[in-house]
Image (cartoon, rainbow, N blue to C red; front, top):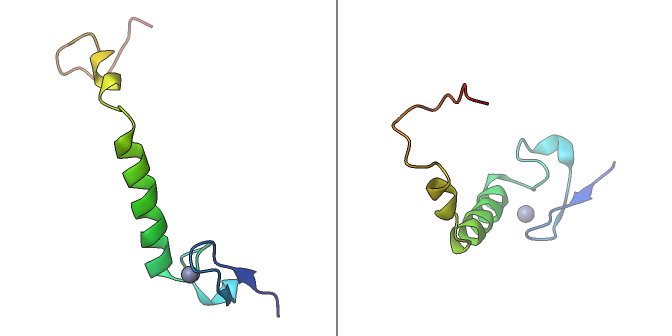
Length: 64
Ligand SMILES: [Zn+2]
């Protein structure tokens, strides 16, 4: 039986036994997601909003 190693807890598991691929379970998937979110929050993402030129609430940009 082929098993893979969970990148979070490094446990060998059967990929057919989980829906949380590539993690061994939803718990490890949440841990990875939490790490990812924390890293992205530490980056100055707010500057992206300033590039919006303060335009009114109009997601569409037909000028392009
Ligand atoms: Zn795991």
